[in-house]
Image 1 (cartoon, rainbow, N blue to C red):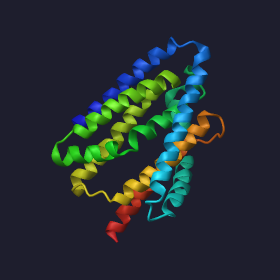
Image 2 (cartoon, helix red, strand yellow):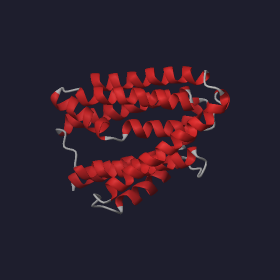
Image 3 (cartoon, rainbow, N blue to C red):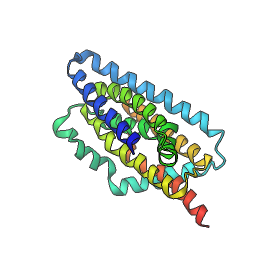
Length: 228
């Protein structure tokens, strides 16, 4: 788990440094910086959707995943709970924090390096992918925190649980991850990142965190098929 620990650590470090930098940014530069992050999220989300849609052999699964994920997240009140954990209303006047945090979680957790890295670490003791991911996430967390504030650091424990879970699954299953699962996760991740971009730009207002359980549906689908 050394690679995951390193990855988590760089996010904590990057978020802390970025939050410190944010305090020195003049107010008139903060909104354009946030808008730039929104546009970047839009571009990345569209790229992930387009590049994975044509590879998808189960076009209805991502729709079912979004529906079930939304219902689950709403029932669990994920957005409200994370919002309370971050103390946004009482300690942070940046109303975009939740969108920034959601973007951070998706960028850090949904990607080849973040998924295959723990598998390679668990099976072969090779931490190269995770160390590479740690460097990228450290830089990304610095940029996001400089725009959205210290709350981005909450993405660190979420990443640790995500990669730690994949590490344990790889140890128990022998590291078999169907390519279609990666495609489904990337497609759903692209949709959610696109949504956060629209939220940041104030084009749309959705509680994107409530949709995060949709990422578990393809995983459960694969497990169910393996049992049947």
